[in-house]
Length: 152
Image 1 (cartoon, rainbow, N blue to C red):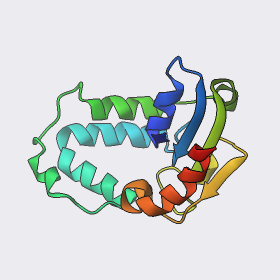
Image 2: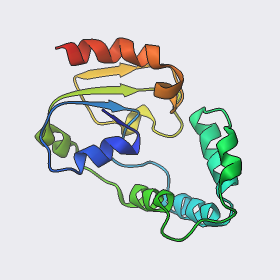
Image 3: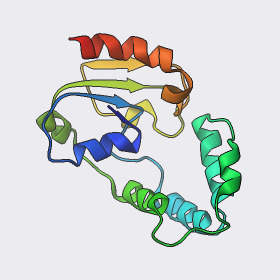
């Protein structure tokens, strides 16, 4: 099961998946490169501010953990590496079909981070009215979709 960029990370492993679930995942990221580059620059200088804005777009409440972030981030921080990955990510649909025997795709038409149009194609696709952080905020709704898939 892969959520968001985690789904692409699963496809970048040398594994042939018997079953795979894609929750708000994508094969390429729709945000323009210049926006991601600007976000990376701002993340280094103001990590709490950038992460708070991102979490708000995801639909997450603002946790107190953001206050514990350092004032600036080092140049090789994992968050910066993820932003770089998003800039270059472009996986073909054929890769999904070659690496995965069964695929369940769960999308949301209200997700501004990973719109349904960027999700991989699958015969088993469900849409849940939830923000990008839906799996964390509404686990029951996702469980209702996932359980029948994993039971087969």
